[in-house]
Length: 227
Image (cartoon, rainbow, N blue to C red; front, side, top):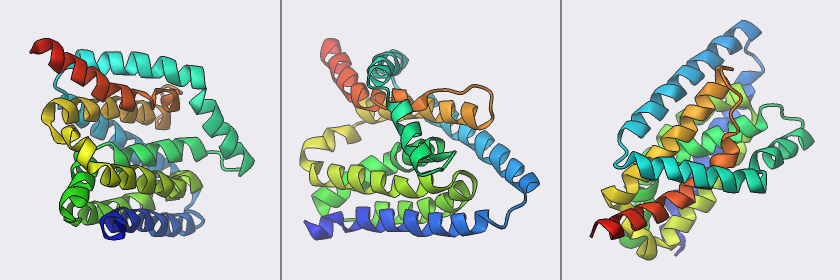
């Protein structure tokens, strides 16, 4: 079991090390260069989100996942809870950094396919490759958004470790009819983060996180009705 969880642990450590480097780098960046970093990250985030959404199979599944998930998240007040936690540790960009990093590190084919492959076959190559990418990304993100990015390592460990342990039950998520719509929902959340970074709209992205759990359920209902 420990061997199967090793890729998720390595990925989490990579995020912590990268974030530590980014936090150190952050102290030496002047305000004018921080503004450029914000815009660079914001525009890149919009691009990533658009690419993810384009790959969705059924946009109605994506839409209703966002609607239902958003209502659940608003009821649970997820965004406010994250902001309150960030205020306690005096980290102004905590919620944005945590949500953004968690989404970018977890909502994608490499996370799902890699974790399930590690669980079923003991092959962690995909996650190890992803760890390198996340290491680089965490340096840039934490230099802009601070400690929230580092804490996303916990999300990486819990989610990827959980998928690995439950790989026998969750292998269906690697099928395109589930995976593509799930990534599409994640893409809309990433777009929301991009709008917030660019100060176009202060979207409550945290309240839409339950949409990621709703999406597979709606995809299952959709595939069942089509049979």
